[in-house]
Length: 155
Image 1 (cartoon, one colour):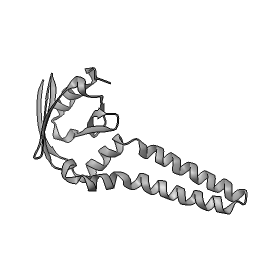
Image 2 (cartoon, rainbow, N blue to C red):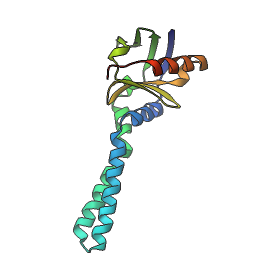
Image 3 (cartoon, helix red, strand yellow):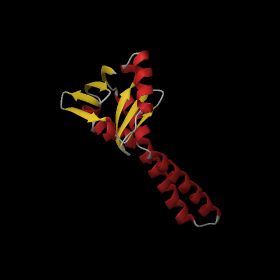
Image 4 (cartoon, rainbow, N blue to C red):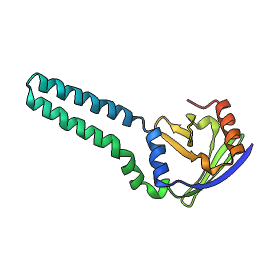
């Protein structure tokens, strides 16, 4: 196998990819829901001060989960959205940007995940390379998906 593709992530793609990688947003959303429930219970029990606190906590965690990936993309836009070239071989993944060039053996990766829009290659549990499927042909997407499904990663 030898697949090479060049692509540039859009800010919207980077946000969606980071949202998929960053699972804490889901836990922040659950925490916001918990605070909303607690505020309702506190108001029902006539404990207004605690109910108000829970409403503010709910709003804070809701805001955090909504805007954390947007802030991350804005902060790292030059690294996330720059032009890059990736090459896949049986032995390694090579990636090149205008700022860096690297090769990673498959065993060094934590895991791979395929979504309808991306291939996500995890370097750690919370850090991954976002590869949009639109950068590859239909045949390359199938070949890469089968190849990644068969890989045994370092985990």
